[in-house]
Length: 357
Image (cartoon, rainbow, N blue to C red; front, side, top):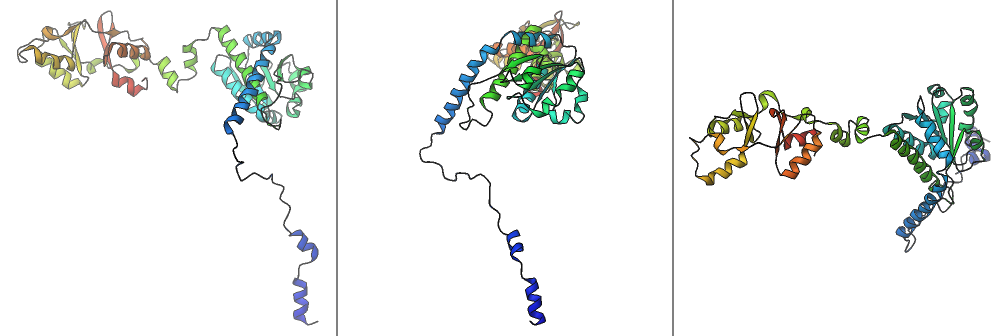
């Protein structure tokens, strides 16, 4: 064999090498690429709703003495509620913790996997742990229970199996058993996660009512949202005040009033006494109306054409309440007064800029 043939032979891949590089079997689940003829998506969706609705109806029996005990324990908790859960139960747990926190029960979520690597330090003996697992056998949570017990942390477990390891270890067990999952394979958590979320809502809302939690309390934890603005924003926060207020004395001429309206750019002016006591208002709408009254614009006094009084609110009035008043009275401005003395003006444009509308 020539040197060339020997080299070529050495470069030929062996059977083993060929087998090592052979295409591997594709174990990826095969997806149907063609839509089955006449597949009824609406019927499939309605079936899910029906199954989950039936599952929630069964949940009523589990709002029992244990539910009452859990609510009382959480109500008197000196620390925080710590919610734990793995997988889909973890996602539901995050929502439950968020609902607690925004409705007057301080709470946060801790991932069980992270808890076993240091985050358990967030939990104190004054806290209450709500551990969620459909089977009640979540290994990650079970590994934490001995530590929680040593620290004397009160444990509420939410599972579908009272006789599970978690169910037996709990100080209070809340059952969320459902007859079947909406998943036709019986595998994907569907009805069970819905039931768990609803049980969490039931706890949070029952505690909300027991605490006398109000819309204003809710707004304090939602200052950045539209709801927070509506429930927290006061007229004093957005009103025009000081030199921004268009006003003229009682003996001013109509011409002086028109100059003030133009200068302050709010479409109106207030007629006041020297101490800012309100006598009346005059708007650009009033100006249009007096053109039909044969009034001499050069000689008329503002007192002769003003509208006496004027709709007013107090500085501490919620902006949303003032907006409702303006809409019901079909006006674009409202006076802000204390003891009948003018301290500010709010225009509809101010409401728009503040996000109240």
